[in-house]
Length: 347
Ligand code: MRU
Image 1 (cartoon, rainbow, N blue to C red):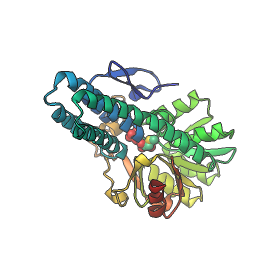
Image 2: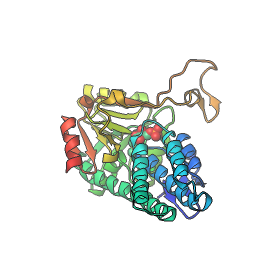
Image 3: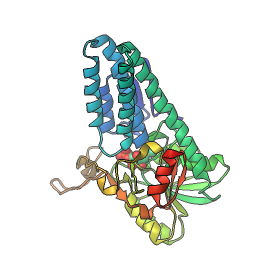
């Protein structure tokens, strides 16, 4: 297998996902700033993995500040929170993890704890966030397995797998859950232009697990649906609004609309940490615009004429009306989502 991200005595160690599938190289990051840069540059990506990485980065920052800046500990931590929060805007798990770390530090400080004690609390909390994510994804897998019939051909978009989480996956957690429940299935992974998370990452991790995987280009899904070659769609999400609108990798909306047209169920799999109850609907979700070079170049080689106009929104919003169900770690939510999602938090 592989380790997406971990805290070691030397720093925060993560698999450099930019180099996959050709090279499996781990980077050791030694400051919260380096972790924030790694998130922005997509060394690590995927909503839950971004949250876990941020938490580890902040814990490392706290432990370092105990020795390096004892008098300015709280101020240094504020700077780390701010810098981490600026890494990427759409995945709410980033802000969720930062808030959780901030709260633990704040409570410890109000309780009279010293810097060393606070740093130890933050190290513990970051590891908890990691471990809980792994457990949440496994629960998503168990709940989601019941939606997957034996012999299904399942389309997924982007990478919502072990590489995007602490190690099991959300959409691919459903795949793994179904396989563990003894079902046979074929996963159709679309390429996911422009960063190719589908071809580079989803195919790579599913093949490592020996799961039957077929790679298609983004433009093929409609035709395959029309030919009756796709039974269901399962994707992850970067942020789910209170009304069930979901933000996910650009191109997800196209797949959802096509699925509805062909009467194919479109499911979203995500832990509760991806649900933003302060966000009323999809229009309030901030959508990241990334470097045009991701579209005009591939590994430094131009694939478009210099000077062409470019749009590169990294995510899109799929309205709740296209989503048949949302599989979470606390159970499956069905429309109307305003009620069913709220009920999961109260359960
Ligand atoms: O830009 P990325 O690769 O971070 O986008 C990732 C996705 O869109 C995933 O589908 C989402 O974060 C869910 S990951 C379990």
